[in-house]
Amino acid sequence: MEDLHQELSSFDSSIKIKPVYFMDSAPVHKSVLTMKVLDKIGVSVLFNQPETPDLNMAELFIRDLKSKLKKSRGEPM
Image (cartoon, rainbow, N blue to C red):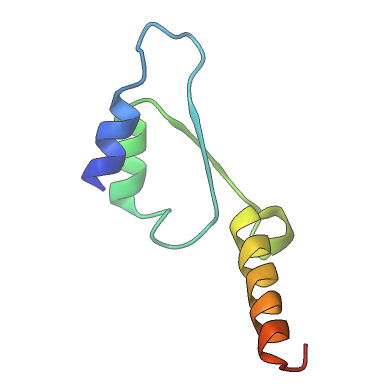
């Protein structure tokens, strides 16, 4: 969490556009600590809709990777 704080703290405070952090609704992302850190450094939070893996690029990547691994092993898809 400290790494995230340091990274986001490096934003230039003279920039008038407030940074936005887009994330899924995992409980760790919505924790009180996470929200306090993001608020403290002035970052807006935009949450992905729950149960929408088609909007989450990581989920799409993992799904495709699993499919390719199964295919390479000759497993039924």
